[in-house]
Image (tube, rainbow, N blue to C red; front, side, top):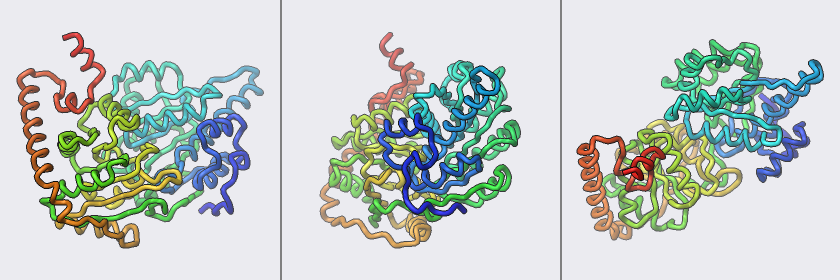
Length: 446
C-alpha cells in the first residue's frame, strides 16, 4: 500500500506540467485532494493503481491528470525522435457504469486538457450510434464509455480498435464487476493490449475488485485515501424511524422543513420517482424525476434543470448514485433504504463533496430495519435519530393524501391518452417539463 503523504502538496510538487497546473487553477482547484496527492506521483511514474477514496474526493482528477501528462510526454517524445508531431488516437479508455458519469468524466478531461487540444468521445447507450461513429472518426485521444456500448462499437464500427491503447481506467470498479457488466468487461479485456497502464478507482472495495486486480494489474500501488467503507466527516447522517403508512408524510415534512435546500430523494423503483415528483408538484414543491426508464436526452434534461436550479428536488433511482458531481446538493434523503448497504455510501456521497457540508436522512419503516442495521454495521457506528414530532408531521396528512390521489389520477389519465394516440411521447414526462429534443420538434410541427 502506498505510504500516506505527510501533507497535501501543491500540484507543482506532484510533478505535473505547467499547462495542467494552470488548468487546475482555472477549475478552482487550489491544492490536491488526498487521493490526488497520493495517486498522481505513482501514476506519473507509470505504476498501475488501485484507488479507494470517498465519493466527492477528486478521484476523476487523480486519474485524468496523469493520463493527460502522459499524453503530452508521449507526443513530445515521438516528435523529438521522428521529427513530426504524432496524433495518438485512442490513447486512453475510461469505463463507467452509468451514462451520466461517463459524460461528466469526459467534461472533466475536456476542461483539464483544453490548452493541449485534447479530444474526447463519449460512447454510451441511449444515444444514436451513428453520431458516436462520427465522433470516433474524429480520432479522439480519450474514449469514455459504458461497457456495453463500447463493445457494440468494437464489433461493428469499421476501423475502430483499441489495439494501441496505453491506459485503461475502471471508475466505480466495484459496480463494473456486477453481473450486468462482467461479460462485456471480459470481452473488452481480450481485445486491448496487455502492455498498458491500468487504474481501478472506487469508493467501496469488494472481493470482485480484488479478483480483477489479480487478473489485469501488474504490481499495483494500492492507495486508500479512506477507510474501507467510510463517509466524509462533513456529512451529518441521521435516520428517522416511522410507520410505513405515513412515510410520504414524513418525507414531505422534512422537505418542507428544509425547503431552501437542494435535495436528492432516492427511491427503489423508476415508477416511484415519477409518482413522487408528481406528488411534490401538486404540493407546490419544485421536483423533477430521473430514472433508467427515461431516454438519455430526458435524463440529461432533468439533470440540467436540477443543476441550473429550476428544480431543487431530484427524485431518482440508483442511476444517479454513482459519481455525479452536483456541487449544490445540500441533502440526500433515502426514501427507500437500499437493500445493498454499499449503495448507501454512494447515495449519501452526492452531498458533502469536496470539503463542503451536507445532510443525509434515511427514512426507515418497520419492514426495512434489517437493511438499515446492515448500513450501520458497514459504517461501524450508530447514527443519531432525526427529531420529528409525529403530531406535527400528521398535520400534513390530509394535504399529502389529496396530492397522492391527484397524482394517481394524472398518471392514469395520461396512460389512457398515450394508449389512444399510440405514440411514444410520454405525457407524464411532458407534464413534469422533461421532453426529448425530437419529441419537442414533433409537437412544434403539429
